[in-house]
Image (cartoon, rainbow, N blue to C red; front, side, top):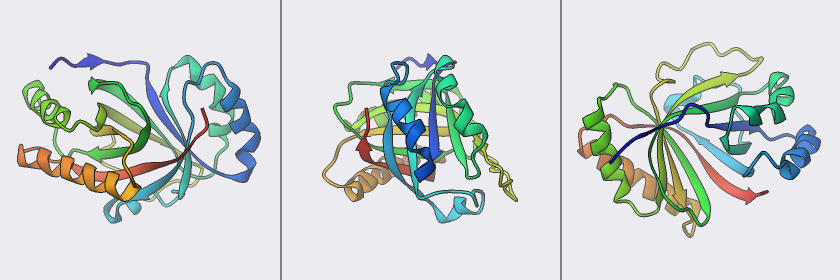
Length: 201
């Protein structure tokens, strides 16, 4: 399985707030932004300490290109709570997604070579509801400076999951996927996840 290098794609996660209404309408009508979602975020106990400015609900904009960021720069630069950007470094695989329902993000405590990553991609690709797997790096923007910096921000794995019956079933599906990877010898830990509540566009 070949890897595709990506230098111009990101996921942007902006805390949802009533004052975001005008910006949201602009993003929904933008020709540049292909998808905009309203999501609920689930942080693990292990990672909550690193993100004191976290929110419960976010606007998720996937597949954001470098030039598309002009649409979001103004609101992001003034936000008081954590805004997360996940820059894709390598797409392990991608296939047709009929309805994105869940995005799960993991961190790896160790760096792995190409052989290990190919094995990981092959293992995950057997899970038919996983429509995309990508390596990524995280940056966090927030006026509330965290006390601790997250140490594995440059060693992340993102999975996109096609729609299941419930978000709980999606979570269980991803957990089984994670455990399968661990059995292959990969150190894969939950960072947080996004459940899609509404697709704006």
